[in-house]
Length: 147
Image: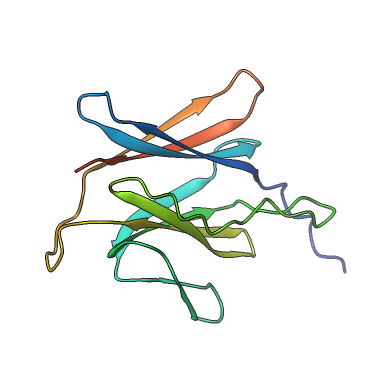
């Protein structure tokens, strides 16, 4: 017997970051663009980002981590080509950078390095939105409030 074919998962094609200091409230946005419909996702503050599978820590700038887990998604295409996985140090006031945590069995993980008040349990407000761009990519946008 053969296994049933797996459904095609949305493929993460691009990550972009933009700062919006003139807005009220000011924020920095990171977008995850997918070829295909939106995946399911979960976003939560954590103490650190660890690699899926190994559990090894992923270094991120800042003093807090916002973990983003996309389910029923992949960061590689059917030929094994991977989405760029940079660990950028962005240097914005609150969104300091981001890093890759994993792409395995339909789950893609990224972490955002966030800067909050030192020695506090502060969690900055975030806003999440979805849109379809003119080129047909499905975008999950995460806005992190600037302090």
